[in-house]
Length: 211
Picture 1 (cartoon, rainbow, N blue to C red):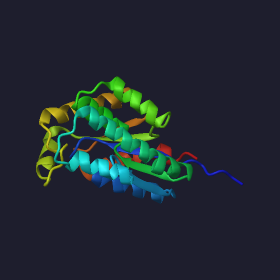
Picture 2 (cartoon, rainbow, N blue to C red):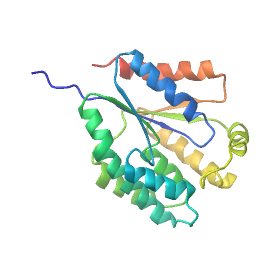
Picture 3 (spheres, rainbow, N blue to C red):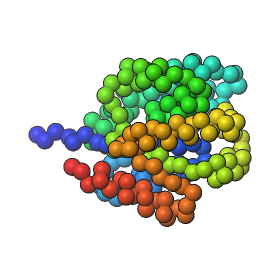
């Protein structure tokens, strides 16, 4: 009996307003067209616990301390990995996740100012050696993303943050992309959508072609 070939793990990252929602479907459709079963999921979320954490952090009325926010993110991630991501990959499915640990480094690290070492410790504890096979970092300058954010109603807790917060988040994302260029592919989204999706398809091509 032939063992199932493990699936691939792809994450999509970026600050609010870069077009993640628009391009998640394109990534899934591209993988499906190549013959892969695709599991779309998100963080925080993906499990009953994760969705409750999402509701609390994005839409809750009470202020959440940054350290508590970080721990809740990793609690939700632990459940997400054990209940959804790892079983799907073991079954040979391709998992496409809207945000993962790069978002934690960007938002709780860069945005909230928590130490990278603390995030790395939790990453090792919760994930072990699991890392995305490919991360698509969608990026656009504030003059593109800010109007999109202002048009959203009602805005969640993160979308209500100041411009300086998003500048720190974006800078952290870009620094990670520069440091891990083999895994993280930077996709500029301040261009016509066909050009953006052509670059996404090009980034996916080497992974899709692997057996």
